[in-house]
Image (cartoon, rainbow, N blue to C red):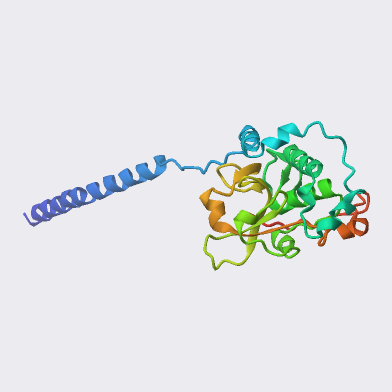
Amino acid sequence: MRKTIVYIILCLFVFTSVEVLAPTELSAKGKSAKVKHRKKTKRTRKSADVDKSLSLLKTHFPEYSNMDYLSEMSFLQDIAYLDEDYNRSIFADYELRYHLVNNINKWLGTPYRRGGRTGKGVDCSNFVSVVIEETLGFRFPAGASSQSTYFSPIKNMDELQFGDLLFFSGSKSKRARGIRHVGIYINDGMFAHSSSASSGRGVKYSLLTDGYYTERFRYGGRFTQSNWAVNLNKSKINPKTETTSSLAGEE
């Protein structure tokens, strides 16, 4: 009789344990199944759209399409004409403007690559460095922060002129001092740069009126007779011997 009672108690205990544990186990399996089948969302990064950039160029700098009759540049030999206005932008010359835009357009669509300086990839400051070297014929360092130190700041956007460099901070806070990005101003609020933005990575034209750039713009810098042209003969590039730093300022 005693054995029978013990047997009944054990059976009741086992039955109760199964009832309590089963829902917990099923719940755990349910959670596990959800986690297992959860899809990871990957951030997509688009490449810079060349056609879109050319459309912006046509809209905001229509003069470019009327400049294709110009012959090869001789501005390096004839640059003394700027003596009349020593602080005038070097890019007041229309042939030089055409030359600059042509050099920029060769790079359109090139992927963004930190520290890059070739057609396989280029960052913002190296893009500016190479284009200025190709256009003006003298070595210009890389590194957005370093580049900004060569100019007297132009803080008013309304005073920007063709060929001015644009310097941006990495934050929209007005207290942000560090320069993290650089581009080349063209006309009518449009500028060229190598962007690391996921909405379009690589060399392209963008607008300063885009809230992102308006908030981060700090100042511009101008190439003039006084700060560059007088040193052309001393700083001309020898492609066989000269190399340039690949320090990068980034968006």
